[in-house]
Image (spheres, rainbow, N blue to C red):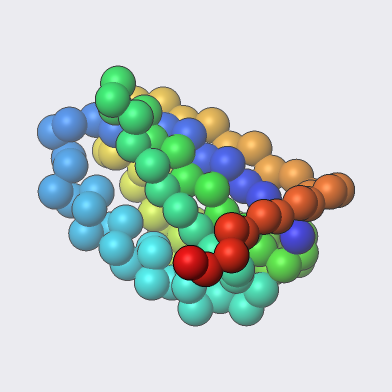
Length: 102
């Protein structure tokens, strides 16, 4: 499994336009072969963090180079983001726990 951590800060003046594009990208992400999950969190200071899981690097690469995603990336650099960082890596170890149902 490949985990990508996308951290960002948005420019406020294009927030509504960003939300429309983000919904489109979320739907597209969910439709990509090899997609596992995505969760996005927003900190009190405005920093956003998305954690995205894909089955393998090939699936992640297909998403990264999808034409609509490439358009969204360019638009993000031009209009939406004050700053962002992307980190991806292969999961080497995983542990899980779930409490038994009451």
